[in-house]
Image (cartoon, rainbow, N blue to C red; front, side):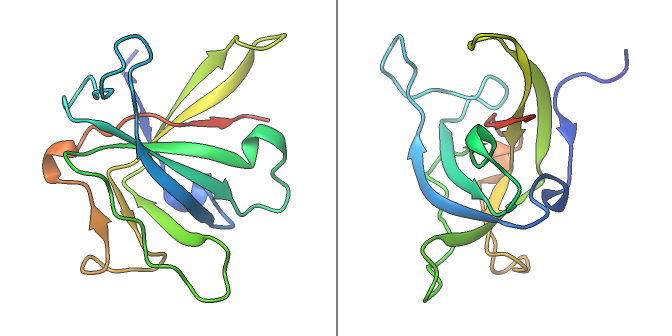
Length: 145
């Protein structure tokens, strides 16, 4: 099969109603208690907690993590007065479906990756990308529903 690894996908396909960032934090390896590293780039992993603005999203699909591999913590867009969360867009997203068998029955879930974080509608100057070496990104999950 020619398809290997994550599949490129547009931000608007994953989040057609937009997304809001809650926080960003370093990922820690559960066993070693050291920073979790991206297997492709070797850079530290950062998880951005995101709320999907889709009014139809429910349960686990409403709150997801998008992971970014970067030397330094990605910078979230500035707060917007009157909004409880920061509107956010992710650049160069990719998705990898997988079977989540941690519950009562297996289900399809999606691992989300991005190469950068930016203000919605922002141009290149307003974007806050991870360093170029962080090209591979890392995973987050979004339930299939």
